Image (tube, rainbow, N blue to C red; front, side):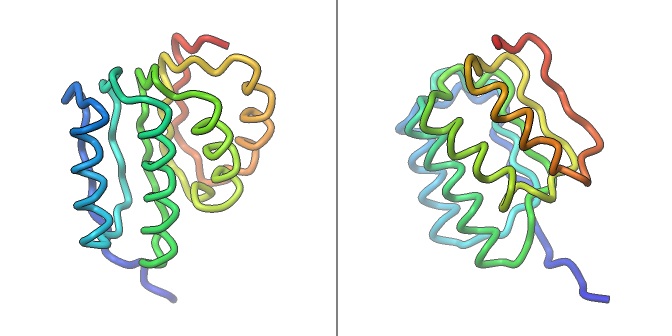
Length: 137
């Protein structure tokens, strides 16, 4: 059986990061090409759509380079997620995020993107925990 590569947990929860703070963290993660299995970024309401796009691109890039798959993604309270990051997120649900076991999207404003996201979540066969409380759909 093929062995899963060693992955790391990136825990950025409740740090109240802004885009400048996040840019430095994302740059460091990209430079070190760390394969991460968990990305916990909830509780950072000041991050904007642009940062979430970069974050999702990093997830894709690190997954491709390491051969690993993200197992846990927590974006609760990501009020800054907008159209661009939600479109990329929905695309990644069919590829780079396919192996998710835990997905937390509490308090995110989804709006008209909900139907698109909900349809693609059916492909998350390994998902064991899904948290969508207080979403604005």
